[in-house]
Length: 179
Image (tube, rainbow, N blue to C red; front, side, top):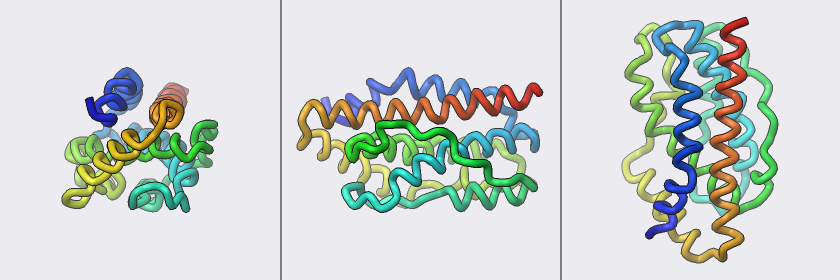
């Protein structure tokens, strides 16, 4: 089994929890869509800040600026980043975090199609360039193959904690929705 398959299996429940947490937002509704983007911004800023400048990671393209632009177009301020997760201090954990935020581009492409054309979608529509996702998965597989059990565990924990960061942001935004 490839390390990416191991990582995907180890984080499947975490991924499902994030999908369920964000699945309550009606993206066709401007208010709900704004809350959805605010929650993403709280989590994404934490992750992108942790990944910035890490030369051990494969090339990646930040999306926080796209998210800030979408929020501004909706008349919303960029929120403060959410609480950081400890494992993002670990270089191996950051590989897991990168897996999560780059994987979210796949779902973003699908979600962008459900957002009315009058609403901004720069963040959700920022898909991978040709071959980018496959290249990242190959790099993660190589990293996992070259790593010991501690490092592979840190990659998985980094991914799980990143999913948890997004799930917590979704839960908080959902609570704000009902205030």
